Image 1 (tube, rainbow, N blue to C red):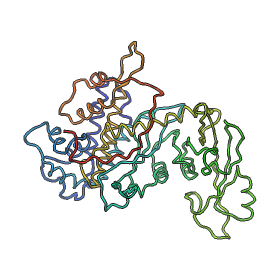
Image 2 (cartoon, rainbow, N blue to C red):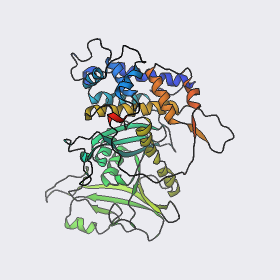
Image 3 (tube, one colour):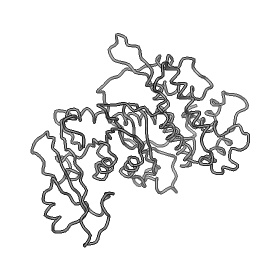
Image 4 (cartoon, rainbow, N blue to C red):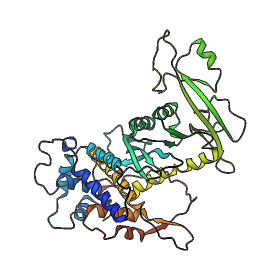
Length: 452
């Protein structure tokens, strides 16, 4: 089923990827993708369904008029912006979402780290044009400041293949990263051994239980008991040491009978979960006469240094013999790959530049960007950079590579040797480089101020 296995030449692989994606577009069931299957895209138009999907996939950050000029090869017989808007109104947001999952399934190439597939989970806010009537996404920070609207992208990211394998988009006020994670884990069709790596926002017994039930392993950074008075570590009897690695065989319940109260005195083995807290494997309510329902969650708590004066704490169900604390530290550091992928998704692929104010149309473009990111990464990852006597190792410049891949998919300006062209544009790899995060709010870029 894996399309990329057995490819001898880069051009063969890129061409197969292109044919696969175009084939998936042609074979989509329109009855599930358009609003009125009996009449939508039934007539001969300048923008048939396949052309519309291809347009959405290959859009950049320019105005809609300039996008259409480029996509039609600057011919005089070009579709108008109005025609494009009317045609995209016929397409359901689910069409691009289905295409994303189909493309992920067709190009899935699992790579191993000690026999495990590494999947990271994280979320990122996406600013969209301001709509004061959309309360679920409207953010009003303080009086006197302009309000803005946010969507929240939750994603599972393959850290070795550098591709997104699942995504859920929610409006900011209605978003739940933990709920999105359990949803994506439960519905995932990924088989084999998996390690799910997550940051502190996913510190939850419910998340750990869902991953455990899936048969996966997890590595989750949690709040350090020396800095926070809440979190999973709160209440455990832990070693009075800077570094430790201890096993916890925890049993959780919602009951609070006299017998359970006696068990709860053993803080490292029993824990009561309040009825107000989400835990899907225990009944939300029970009568006094009902027997106590217990659920076992075995895990390790590991605290290790990350610098001279800083420590991090993680919980994991990985084996202590195969994954000692030093290896867990290296493994967690790989999670940063999903953070850099969000940067490339927004600034290189163009997730900051939408061509509509309607949320339904924006959802089309979000999944289109995810597909384009995967398409570009799958091609770029096979480019071989010639080794020379240089200070740094080099990799393909993803910004240039994504532009080349976009033109390659569009098929108007097709490079004769895509591998050689991408390999000409390289950038040095500088491990350990870091910069402070710029947390200033950035306003959505208006349609009136797009690049020419």
